[in-house]
Image (cartoon, rainbow, N blue to C red):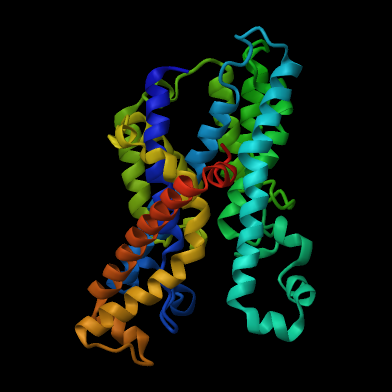
Length: 388
């Protein structure tokens, strides 16, 4: 892997984790959320417009980039260190048990304990086993949360999304599925094959993704397969991430900004037309990030070390941070949110935007602080939680 690719990947980790926080930071006031208003973004409140632009559109390039980087890193050094293919996969898969599977289980377990403690009255009332069963039972580890129940793919088939009990860990779950498929990806995409086979392999994956074909099996999604597969293809063929996306810079930038505006106007994939445009927008966004060769000074102070902890931990505190910030800001301004939440949002959109932005900032800062404490006093625990 080229040094410039390595530096860029390290620089992107923290900003991408913050973008994931921003996705989940969207504020839905009762009677005011986009589900209830049933409008498109251009007809919405100023605050809603601002949050949709970030949470529903721009920040959605973060997880695809994570998948792309994961696929790229999995096949780094493949076939150049003298190892047999079998030994290479054995080494990589064993390492992923430590870096992905163990943190996956630990964090979901912690979140189950955390929510059980928060809802201890209900747990005491119905019993622990009944409470666990009501929240998905063993499915909490893989697929106990569903959304987009009314969404369909290009072929008119149901295309609902799902996640384990710890919502952001759908990425970890899908990543494990992609890793399990790496031998198959290697067979189709490796350089020793004819380029035709690689083109056919990527062509099939691309068709599934751009038509948003529902693969029906939780954890097996066309989005994760496409970006992980694309990263694998580039790595297997010895390509640079930066150089691969550096072609047609002007076209990519124009396309990205045009589709960005369109997606914001259509509320991302929360509207039918926006959903059709969505995969093309995300691809243009990913290409934009890499072909602009974004650099960062974060590596100088080790900002990337916080990225996974922020990604895993933020959902624990996000709602609490919002509640505290709302009370503090409303007390400072002397205002009150009445039953007419739409009126409040229309009259004080800057306050909603302020709460939204501070919610992201404080969630990230608190996560980083807790990471520092755990890393200082319980470094082994921190290493387990972060897959090191």
